[in-house]
Amino acid sequence: MNRLKRLTRREYWYDKLMKRHLTPTSHTIEKLGVGYGGWHVPTDMITPDWVIYSFGIGEDITFDVDLINRFGCTVHGFDPTPRAIDYVEAQRDTYPNFKFHPLGVWSEDTTIRFYNPRKEHFASYSILNLRHQEDYIEAEVKTVRSLMSHLGHDHVDLIKMDIEGAEQAVLPNLIADTIRPKVLCVEYDQPVETFSKLAWQCFTRALSLTQALRDIGYHLVVVDGWTTTYIHESSNS
Image 1 (cartoon, rainbow, N blue to C red):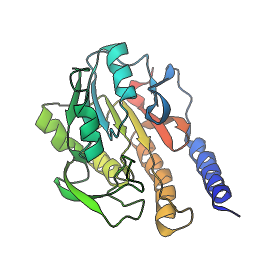
Image 2 (cartoon, helix red, strand yellow):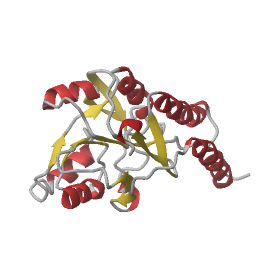
Image 3 (cartoon, one colour):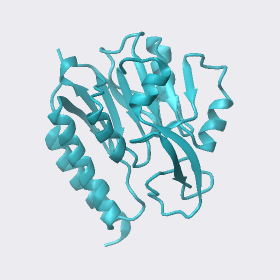
């Protein structure tokens, strides 16, 4: 069986097992943003005063821009990696409601290694070193609670995470710190190889984290490949 078939098989079982947790919702679910930067969200819930944290910018803010243009929200974007910083800097004056912070998110406040992407022109650095690279940069990371304190927020309404495997540490920390955004958008990133200890860890971790979120009142409403959307039960009508 070639790699593509093995990967397709793993994605099939991920999709099948994750969708067992899907819960019907009366909210209007729409995809904002385009391509790999798009996310499904309950658009009937979002109001201009929502506090939104977007972790993992890379070189695509179409999701963030749609939130700004359609709802008038202010979006706080976080990404400490070089290509993301250059990308945002080039258009910083275009979207004044997009507030960029060159910081990463993690389970503690520290400085940590971000390992290089697999190809030089890619933007995705990974703390978990999903691409098995030797080269890395070091960057500052903080917990969500620390970022909230720094920015003067007592709550966050929507959190998006596209953080190359770091969700495995950040989500448990979010749960432990009793931070309950109304909407959580999470990509469960995967390593290059199909069968390995790390691949199995990422696969099973997505399932266990979904159960952990369910235990504290989150309903899984979207599974789109490796990306997911959860709504907290307090937000359901």
